[in-house]
Image 1 (cartoon, rainbow, N blue to C red):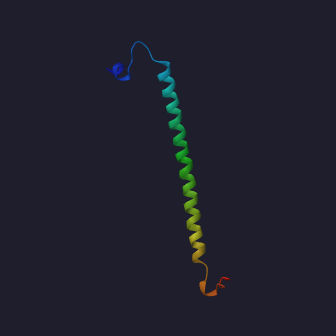
Image 2: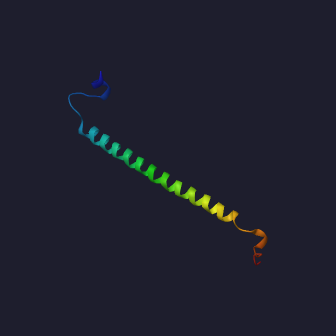
Image 3: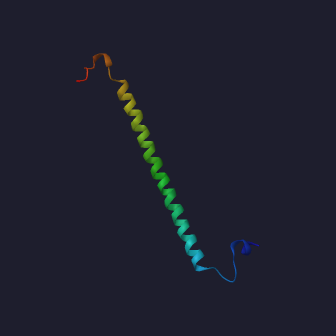
Length: 68
């Protein structure tokens, strides 16, 4: 049954095996990219929270007006 599901007919096709290896590598590359992007997103979120706290610390009543 498993042979039928895998399309096994007298031997593994090297092209299918090569494609499977290529796809497995692509999945690993994409998973690594997800981890990198999540770390970057976390850093940007932390920086945005820090920026918000800096903006809240500005005393608007003491701020100088902008030049027109």
